[in-house]
Length: 137
Image (cartoon, rainbow, N blue to C red; front, side, top):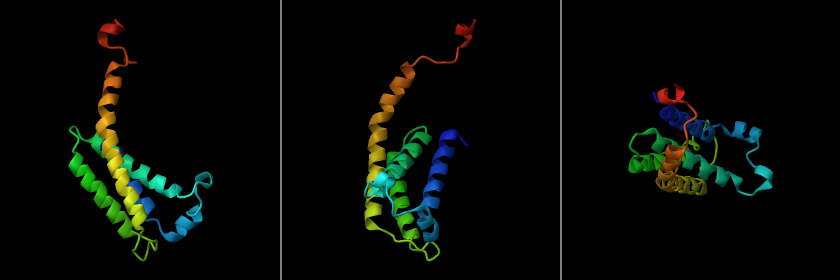
């Protein structure tokens, strides 16, 4: 399995674990407190987590499949929220969290669409730190 695909699978697994962590474990970690007292910081985290999901999956394929990754991201957002209703997990599924997840998916698609070509040009123009055969001689 290629490294990029492994990163995408790992990130997806991390999302599932984080979203389906039982209520007791989440409260022990301090769910109600925002980072540095920023209200609704969890929404920023939701957006970022799903944007990274999209970026990793689009980068994992040789030819970005925007529609498939977008549908997968939307499905993951719905599945993670519905999974929180399972009695073992015992958390609240929130429509606003799901909406922010969807915004994260869209942000990831837009970011990849416009940033990937720019990044590729920058990386291609950058000098290689590894000497090739002709440079090493």
